[in-house]
Amino acid sequence: MSLIQTENLVHFEQQYPYLTRFNLRAQHKQGYRTISRVQLEELLSSIPHLEQLELEISADIDLIDGNQWEIFLTRHLINLITFDFKFDLHQYEYNNIPPNTFRSSFWLNIKRWIVVLDPIDSSFKTVPRFARKSIHFSNDYSQPTITDGSLPFFDHYMYIREITLSSFINNDWIERLGSIVIFNQIEELNIGRNQLLEILIKVKPVMPQLKRLIVSCLSLNTLGKNNLKDCSFEQIRSLRFYDTDCTVNKADNLCYLFPNLEHLQIYLKHRLEIIPYLERYIHLCTFICELKTVSSSQHNKKHATRDIGHEWFVKNVPRWRIINNFTCQITQAHVYLWINNKHKK
Image 1 (cartoon, rainbow, N blue to C red):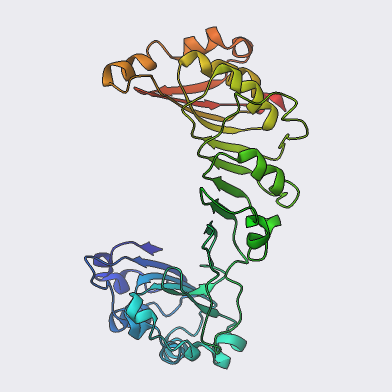
Image 2 (image 1 turned 90 degrees about the horizontal axis):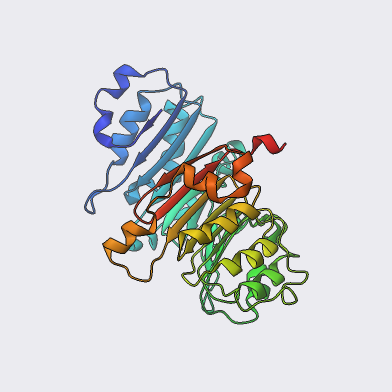
């Protein structure tokens, strides 16, 4: 069971005394902490059969005491097997934490619960449950260090799955980033500059699990097939593509670069430019398009998607005249499509 608001804790212990699994997420309100150590101990001691406990709390510093937790858990939660937590702290509190209280035999040898400080978000947490999953990399990025040598060793970047690259990064970025993260675990790449091909050519051999791309800007209209030779990225399944300078001609190049897309989000200028993407991408499951008209007035936005509907797609996408298996939703400037491709198999 999970509780989102601490107001829900009233009479909780009388209602659920035999819980074996409990998740509590309590966010602060206007700078005030949501729950104190006394309140939390009263709550947890009333559900003594817990086997799995997870806490995500804006915490007072008195919760960051491994010795107190050891005493409480051994007295009141003797059946506890899994204990994960993430305590968010104010910066001044973070700088005064004594983490060595989580280095006892109880934590490391008996329970095998590893607790670390995360200087990036000023949090105190168990890993791998709350290990960082994403990183924003720029030229001035410096790897956070843990200054207290009493902490157990933990690679904060072991579980990174998503990378966002700054708009302007030096040419040695891949060497620097490769010394921090494990490339063959990366699944998503967010590129905030116009050198997509150059970046993808570098990452293709080292990121075999890369499946999702988020691209801010890309110019494919000037590229011919000769420029795209040996640049097909078959492993990419999802592309979010923000570029207001799209034309029908770009569809050929985009489909050549990413032939196996299943999820596509794109900006286009005219509704007819939708058709080549739907015709060429036979594996699409979801398609989201915002039509960016020349004028940003509300009047023109209403006209951008006028007359678009189920019949319009069947009429204008030749492949869909035979395979009529999709659902659409049309707003003022957006087109949403969900396509059932099970028949292909």
